[in-house]
Structures are given as C-alpha cells and as structure tokens.
Image 1: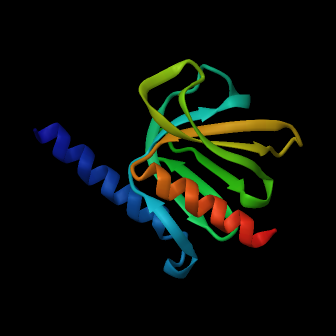
Image 2: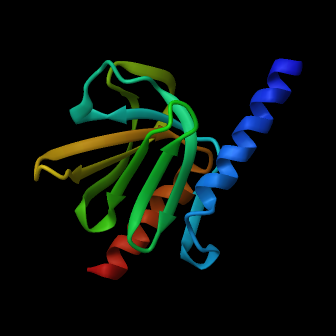
Length: 133
C-alpha cells in the first residue's frame, strides 16, 4: 500500500510538470494515465509505459512518466486514426488507439495507446484533423 501511494505521489508531480508546458486553452483532450505501446519504427524492444497523452489543435503529444520520454505527433502528419488489439507483439486483449503518420524521416510510421474513452479520442482527433484540411 505504501509503495502504491509513493508511486501515485511521484506520478502526480510528473503529471503536473508535463502539464506546466501547456496552457489550459491549448488542450483539447487529455488522458492522465494511458499505456503507450510504442512507436513502430523504434522496434519491439521498447518498454511499454504510462504517461500523459495530450491533444491540442496542432499535435498529439505523449510523455512517459518513467522512463522520461517525449513523443510529439503533429496532426498534419497523421494519416489514419483507428483501433487495433495488439501492437509490436504486445496486447491486453483490448482495443488500442492507433495512429498512422509520417515521421520525421518522411517515412510511414505508427503508434498505439491503451486509453479510457477510446471513441472520444478517435472522434476528437478525426474532428480536429478534418477541420484543418
């Protein structure tokens, strides 16, 4: 129980640190504890981890709590938003938020998260992307 409380306190501090990089008006949607399954181009050896997923009018941003890693996916580069049940050989037998995008090297790539309110995430991302086109 004590270990759980310590982790909760640490993640709360990290959550607040991550949010401090954004103005409240920038945030369209936020998930405080999604599970990141990785980025396809980085391979199977990635550690799956929790963090903060933030949708703004320009990007889908994710920062892991531990290890500290940041991922920024500009919405202009996202080509498809859908669901899948596994990613990079990892599964919890639940639907994952899955994006296909063009990465910094100009190559097709993808990423996935286990998020609450999956339909809300899919619809909001699609809605913002549609508005920008």
